[in-house]
Amino acid sequence: MLEDFLLRQFDISFIDVSAYVGLAAAGVMTVNLFVGLLLSIQYNPTANWPHRRIPLFDHHKWSGYGALFLSLLHPVWLPLSKVAHFTLLAVFYPLVTTEQPILVSLGAVAAYTLIFVVVTAYLRHRFEYAFWKKLHYASYVVIVSFLVHGVFTEPSLKPSAVIDYFDSGKLFIEGCAVICIGLIAWRMTVGAKLRARNASQATSLPAWHGQLVVDRILDAGPDVKVFRLINPAGGVLPFHFLPGQYLSIRLTDGERVFTRSYSIAYAPEQCEFCDIAVKRIEGGRGSAHLHESIEPGHVLNCTGPTGTFTFTGTEADSLVMIAGGIGITPLLGIVRHLAAVNWPHDVYLLFAVSTPADILFEQEISAIAQRYRRFRYRILPSKVNDFAWEGPSGRIQPQHLAELVPHLARRRVHLCGPESMMAATIAILRELGVPDSQVHTESFGGEGVIIDDSMVDATVTFSASGKRCIAPAGMTLLDAAEACGVPIESLCRVGTCGTGKIKVTAGEVKMQRDDALTTGDMRRHIVLACQARAITADVQIER
Image (cartoon, rainbow, N blue to C red; front, side, top):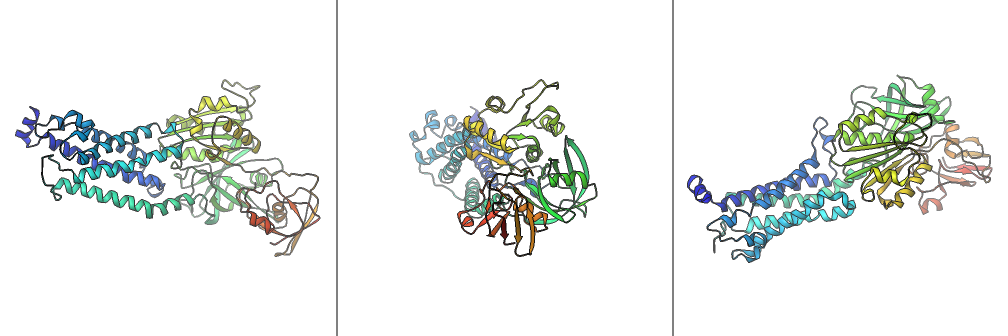
């Protein structure tokens, strides 16, 4: 009855309606593939279009839902048609149809596979991310099956009908097929190189060296100051950075020259300034110099940004951040970025502090939580005596993480704080089933001295510059070099970044850690300046 009306009024049958819905499904699938491939190469639209907020993931998600809806709607008109001879059973099991059963079945394969892809994407937080990515490759099966079905199926389903490949509908499907083949070929060739380049940006050596001006200094908490840095020439910053990276600042105190690294506490979307937070450490040369001697208007020599403790939103589909004290700094930059782009996945923060008085950036964190609905956080002071504190307290325990974060074992974790706190937390994460491969850490060491009975006062000679100094027992070669004005780059100062490699040509040294050294380095007597301490009275450095 309805089909007769459509034929009389519009000359359209239910078979035509089915074909138009199928064409729409093919178009939406092509758009979905394009956006998905952009996501797969870690394309960041915000970096290229800073004044446009293009939520690629939302486009990919909703185009996937749209493609599924249209794919399921595509065959339901056929049993209603008087001329198609298409039964209700054939909708679910097309092999029983008498016309082109294999080609029609490919459409069913595409629909069933698309259901699998959409459902597993919706439940992706229940899987390990790497495993879910493998499941998501079924998307290619959907595209290929549906396009082959669309190109080679005769749309009228009439016996012995000849396919007109130059029909407007066929030309549209053929165009979608050519675009999809081109996109897949691009992803396997040029896209693979772009992904490798984008992924390597976080690990590449610093490309920028220059000056920044201290615009203002803010008190962020007990012994913590925030230094806002701007371009001396005005306008935007002279570099781009990833959320979680840090700047290295070369400081001069009299004749002493030394370098310290500080995380950027802002998101890259804010390109007119960047903030670094500096906690004053007892006996710390860099933090004391910044707190006591640097004022607004000072010009600082900077290197970077650098660091691999980054998260842009393409690395995983959820993020758990655990901070201790000043370790909140890089994580604040990350959560600010995710909030700025309205990242549509779960973000959790557990912030451990000594007392409620030591909470840093509390107002900023609370404001982000109010406007960014995906973000949940909990602050955990270890001591609450003499404070009006109603929430949980104490050192981090398994229940604190389990209560805050569902399905913790399947999520990516970023951990930053004091070494002892991180070691204890890593043990808890292992106890809760989180694989080490999903835990990413960052630690900037303090500036204290480590001494054991094997370390001695030593004369350190730098052969290239001819300079010589006395290094008291326990002083690192990096500190000795800085004391006598020999520049040695060391960005992390804890032996993990590998930038502080030097060669010992005479004497012996001892290191607390050698993570960043290869076997070849050790054979050639390469050591880490920030870790090496003299155990003989004379040490000579090729510098």
